[in-house]
Image 1 (cartoon, one colour):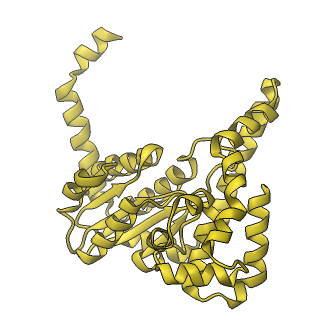
Image 2 (image 1 turned 90 degrees about the vertical axis):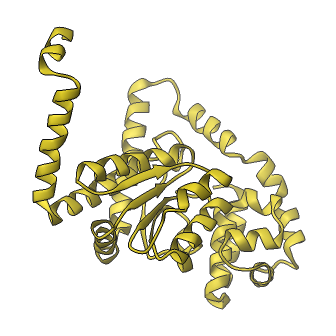
Length: 292
């Protein structure tokens, strides 16, 4: 743990009881996104944490700083020297050259991530998420970068279950076109492991305004988006950055998809047969046998 993380964690532990719910959202965002503190104004931090500039200032002062400038000065040096690339390089160096030890390390981390995700995954929230997906008119999955891959997987699997679904990683004006069809009865699934960008906040707010429900998959942003989200499910990220970001998210999605499939096994069976028939017509068995 870096000096920055220790300092903020200690201040948050000392003052958490005196923080309002909105100030707690700010404190959580500051702790999980230290790089954004240096780069952002109070207004931008308020937008990113789902609060306001005034709440950011109050939260910073409640944590014992004179204001945002002092907080920026306090963490600036840590942010410069403790980047994700630096942490990843250190972890790679620590792994050494022993292949068996590397294998054990990565498998152990993966097991730990899955175990912790299961511990955090509350049954009421999981059931509520299944209800959302099973009752959706259409599901739109949204993730940026690597985080889009599980959303693409979700859309494909839901389509195979006979349900309308799509995914996108669009930003800016292109995202507006993707959000436009959202309507009452749809579900917007946001995969945001640890970083909350303005496009994500805008998309979640629009989904709610359009009457759609919002399902969030995250490791660190639960409190930050509380007011814009109907259900939040945990997906613990890799502490080292060496195991796949989407590992726990994909497993949670598999659990959701199985539960959704059990709601209407007849439709699943019919769609499976149709999929097999389409595959045969697109790539007949005699052609497949000649290629093998």
